[in-house]
Amino acid sequence: MRKKKIIERPFSTYRHTLPPHLHPVLARVYLARGIRSSEDLDYALQRLPSPWSLGGIDAMAERLADAIELGKRIVIVGDYDADGATACALAVSGLQALGAGQVGFIVPDRFRHGYGLSPALVDAALSLSPDILVTVDNGITSCAGVAAAKAAGLDVLITDHHLPGDELPAADAIVNPNLPEDDFPSKALAGVGVMFYVLTALRAKLRERGWFEKTGLVTPNLGAFLDLVALGTVADVVPLDGVNRILVHQGLQRIRNGRSRPGIQALVEVSGRNPRDLVAADLGYALGPRLNAAGRLEDMALGIRCLLAEGGDEARILALKLDSLNRERREIEAQMQAEALRYLDSDLLEGQAAAGVCLFEPGWHEGVIGILASRIKERLGKPVIAFAEGESGTLKGSARSIPGLHIRDILSEIDASRPGLLQRYGGHAMAAGLTLRRSDYDTFTALFSEKVAASLQGMDGDQVITTDGILSADDISLGLAESLRKGGPWGQGFPEPLFYGDFPVIKSRIVGERHLKMTLRSPAGFPLDAIAFALEDPVSWLSCAQMRLAYQLDVNEYRERRSVQLKVDYMEPLR
View 1 (cartoon, rainbow, N blue to C red):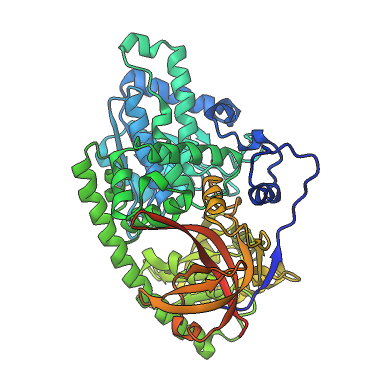
View 2: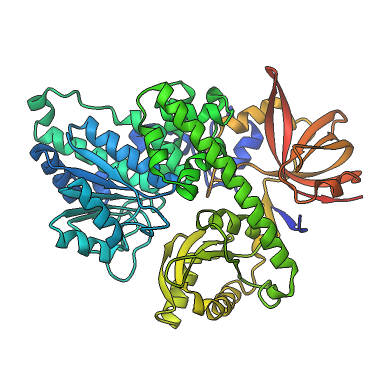
């Protein structure tokens, strides 16, 4: 691990009304994240903003209500990541629960159709004889695809959360909280969150029309779908602002209470997690990757079918297939990472390392370059774009950024300064995708590094690790670890509590090839378990007698015994 500067997250105790029973450390953690009152920790569904505050949602609900009443054929256009898969499953299940009789779905093959509602995907969708296409987690930049669908006589409804381009597609209705002038209080909704809001508005619209009385349908409890919303929201690494924390908290409660759908129960089972103790991190690091593996290596329809499975046996078979694909994905990733590290050790990287890094090797798997970019970004502390070969002489890139650098804005600057260099691009602050001609790769890499260097001028970037301070001897306890675990949901934008300190090492050993299991001496003098996962060279740490650690205070469960454990995020040797 690279040596970093450890700093403490500032917090203010001025005029707060947090519950007096909170552990002082947890109160400090909340204050450092902007929590000021008990109301900020109230995750009741009633505290969600009104769906009618989302721009375009009334027109969207009207269109969908008309489609349901007229028995039109609706086809959901999904995406090949976990957010797109959960949003697609939510749309299909939710529309059916609201009385739609003809609902299907199609998801692009990243290798044949590209991203989102492309003209090629519209051609494929026509075989399903749709009247209406409804996009989830995509569509806001699909001008050509929407034009193709409209030319074929289809209505097009777009639900998305990605940043729009200069031109909006000519869809019949668009709901996206990130549209200019949209007043919805959360810009952080994932695609699945946007679709959840559309369903709530649609249910209200159908109630106004007396639909449930006319048909005898039971008005569905849309809260039953929040397990999908929680999974997609966490897996998409969107900021857990107040709205998303409510959605994730409620979804986690359903999973913990055994009220989630069979597909999610099966994913929890194959990932070896205990559903009663599931936390947001498990959705992001255990369930999400297994779901994503289908879209990376095969067909995300497999993941969607798992989420839509009505029986436990069917769900388990599909979840086991997803688990197998995830293992295969890990093997491909390990090979690609080894090649990337050889590249980094060569002279080819000279001149790039100080700013943004681009990587490309012929034969790299397009479905895995995003994970590869994340791994190399973590190693270098720099924004990284990994490329794979596309069709017709193009390269497809997956970008991962660092705090303080909006990667999609960097691509936008490049596009403005060199029109035509990027064939397409889109994404978020921390992750983006792009396509360019292979012949333009060298030009792009130089320009990318230049723009990143200018944007990061004067910033420490990823060389700083922000913590919640040092824990006292009494605070390193199972009780506080339990309180912190229950104090979430933690995630992007609402980070899990991270502490630091210096610890003598009593003994250490390597487990699972790349993990370092340690017994430390706590400030109180007792032995303390700690573990550091996925080290590049775990053997090099065995000789350390004392370490400075940045860590999460975690609960270790072994044979029904629960104990406190440090989960190491960063470490450096002291001697």
